[in-house]
Image 1: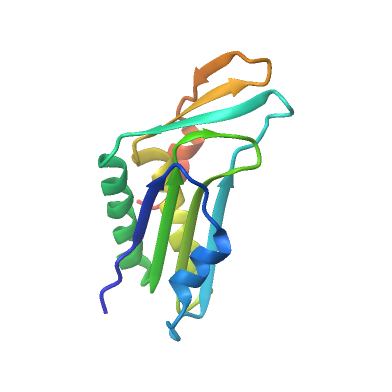
Image 2: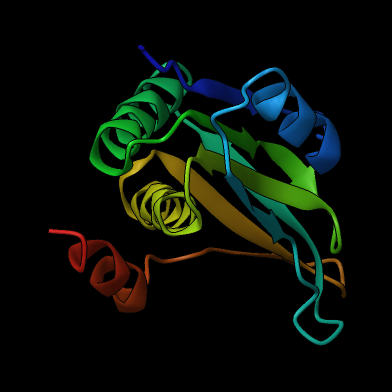
Length: 153
């Protein structure tokens, strides 16, 4: 059976439960569904929003590539990856990964794998907007994200 991931890059919000239901409905072989939902945090009240940018076409292609690797490596029965762009306020959703597998470990590993590679390989950028009205800087890549990705090699 060929599993095709669901990939979306969108401005509008998403509903976690709706995405889980869409992925798992009518698939009796699924024994585990793992979700990761990344939210915008306020950094102790200092952050008013994140501005998320992406490279259209290339972001979706890289998300698809990463997701197909996860499906093959972990035997996933379904995978959804959604990333938002535009201005996102604290508490709002940024990213969602839903991984479905026959057993829990494969679903956990699949979701972790996708997030570790999305953070380092997909062309997305974040700019901070501070609560005092000042536009902040673009957020730099973190060594910890590279280390998390490298554990999968």
